[in-house]
Length: 115
Image (cartoon, rainbow, N blue to C red; front, side, top):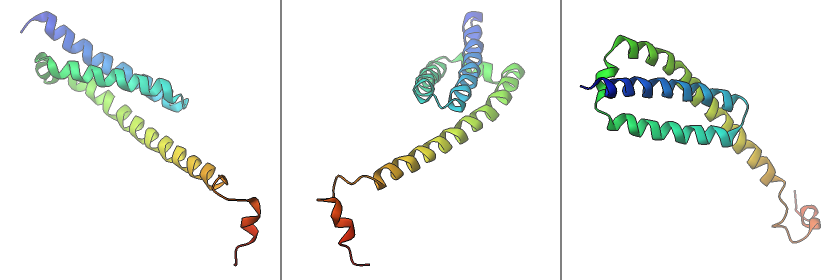
C-alpha cells in the first residue's frame, strides 16, 4: 500500500468530517441551497472513498475509529434536522395550498355550501 494512497484515505475521512460539520451549520441556518450543495459534495467524496482501496485499510486504524466516533453524532443531528426541516416545509406548503382558491369558480361558492 502506498503512503500517498493512505494519506489520501485519511484526508478523505477528514474532509467528510468537515463537510458534515458544515452541513450541520447550514441546516441550522436553514440555508437549504448551500446545504444541498454540501450534500452533493459529500456524496461525491463518498464515491471517491469507495473507489480507493486504502479507505478500508485506513478504516481499521484507531485514528479512523476516533474520527468516525466524531462523525456519527453529527450525521445523526444532520439527518434529524433535515427531516424536521422537510416536515416543516411540507406543513407550510400544505398551509399555502389550503388557502389557494384558484380552483373555485367564484368567491361566493364558499357561501353556497350546505353545512
